[in-house]
Amino acid sequence: MANPEGVEQAVRALKRAQIVALPTETVYGLAARADDAEAVARVFAAKGRPSFNPLIVHVADQRHAATLAQWTNTAQCLADAFWPGPLTLVLPRANDAPIADLALAGLDTIALRAPAHAVTRAVIAHTGPLVMPSANPSGRLSPTSAMDVSRAFTFTEAGAGDAQIALILDDGPTRHGLESTVVGLTGARPTLLRAGPITADALAPITGPLSQPDDTPCAPHSPGRTLAHYAPARARLRLDATTPTPGEAYLAFGPSLFSDLNLSPTGDLIEAAANLFRHLRALDEAGFSHIAIAPIPRRGIGVAITDRLERAANVQR
Ligand code: TXA
Ligand code: MG
Image (cartoon, rainbow, N blue to C red; front, top):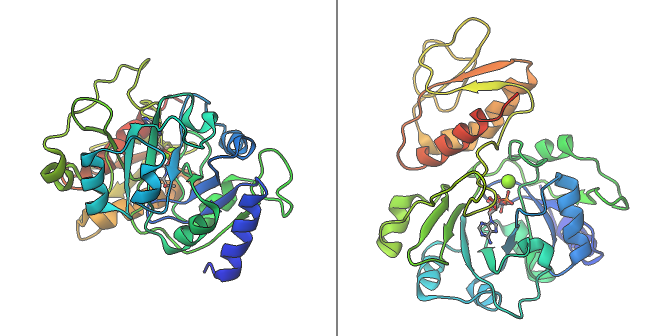
């Protein structure tokens, strides 16, 4: 468990322009001070992340966010309802926002989120805004435990090397298991840029019907919406599979006659979201080259689960 000394150590490392892995209520993140170009560059290097893909800036609260963006009524209503929590808002950036250009990939918009996790909130209270992409090599499964992070990166106590992580704060498995919902507030109507734990149905009373971004592979509205993403390291995925074929692992959902692992034996979508990346990683590491996945209902957080699976299944091998 992360303790006050852990928080202090993380704050010290961040103030020295090092990068640290922190738990959030969605997935573990790789944090750097958002105003420190060198530290932000280390995050891109550690992840192997393309520099055109901007990072989410994590803040303490709405007051803080409003100093970095051109805050709107809709942003205020959404933050009142869902912050701190798993919701990211994309807004026009404030001209004088003290955020490294690299963090925003040169865009004139900024993605903002106030995370709910107590440990990370304690860190942010001392450091100010932090960029925090999911703590995985670019394109791979997001980490839902400290172990996932430590297996994907090299660590150094001094945090010396360019692409190395100074420390990781372990606070057990993450609650939601999927990345935050991302809502774009820069156009005429709010847009659902990434499905997540806050569902479209939960947002609609505030935003009205959300429009879907009209992506083309070359010009996605949100640069991270590339079609191939969230992939296991080796295994190929087959979706909406009611039975496995010989040699395939079967990732079940609900009561099932066959299953190597089950996302939720009782058919609970929230439990399935929390288990998704963990189970995919476990089957991949067990050496299966093919994983068949049971149909997942496209309602509630099932929409976000399906979104991640479809992108992961798109990865060419
Ligand atoms: O739950 C989360 O959001 C986690 C935790 C650690 O907070 N973070 C996370 O960050 O998922 P990342 O970098 O893995 O995903 C951020 C997504 C990317 O798809 C990126 O393209 C999009 O947000 N994004 C960031 N800034 C944007 C902007 N200005 N406009 C549109 N999309 C943006
Ligand atoms: Mg990510």
